[in-house]
Image 1 (cartoon, rainbow, N blue to C red):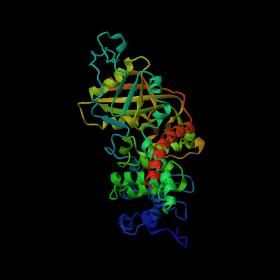
Image 2 (cartoon, rainbow, N blue to C red):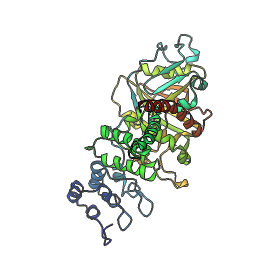
Image 3 (cartoon, rainbow, N blue to C red):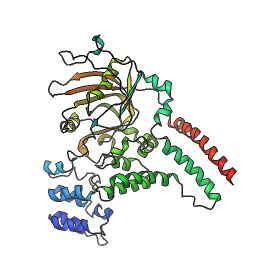
Length: 438
């Protein structure tokens, strides 16, 4: 708000529908991102007034070209999406297709590690009754993997080959161990006269995230300022909400969560307890566009007794099947199979986090896109394949039903103890070398 309580120039331009003035204000070199999103004296933002009055061109520009904050609440506790004048305006808040087609429908191109023979033709009813087909032979390999999943012959096979703790930190140990190492170097640095904040935990994590943003989102991207704003907000409020919103943006940051060393995994693990009210129970949907070779992984899983699969990366799923189907229907490669995952979480679990609003608990939506009903499935969740069925209404389409398997969860204290124990070995060696050198 201005010192005299007057409305900002941007707000007035949005209210009057002056498209050119809005563009001029936002394109000024000294335009401050925070001021473009401020709450005015009447409790609304510029986006609120443009949305409520149906200024479609302005709303589109603010969302797509400027990347303003869309989740900010007015004094009535409503977002700009919720106060939209009509469905045409609300449509502008939805993710653009074919933008990020792999968010709810991943495209799996190849599976080099799968060694399974081709199956015989399916039964007339479309179900893959593999157990009843003596001609269907499946590899005796006890594990199977592709770009997105690992397979084991039982949940205890996972625990038998490595502790559950090791499984949980498999995709983030370098980040965690680097934090421990940097803290140790910080202690040594004090004796050398270095700044004690040079290697602080926050500084290391911030550098990890900022590197991903700078390398893949890049300053010229319309959402770059918002990405940096959300990163700053995370380190200011010490809550996971801004990082989750960063994940849901339509930017290349999302695709980089496929890398196992992405720092988002570590941050989510640290804040899981604070998300307890969002632990999910129910059914979610996710699409997959896969080759026949990839499809063998799930046929193998259905054939094997007590088989389970674990996802290697974050999975964006939706409680609305139409969201997953919408992304599937926009895939253009006719040489691949369309697969709809129907995933059942029989009990509330920390491995699935509901990002949509939960009014009864007073929780607002954490996703950039309020209409997607997103449920975020964390890496290393464990599933069994319950059924594979042919979709009789869509060509080259299947439905795969997965059921989440709950196994004893070790506490985070145990988790971090194990990480610290492993990290301490490296630190003792580092300190020994330091002492010998000095």
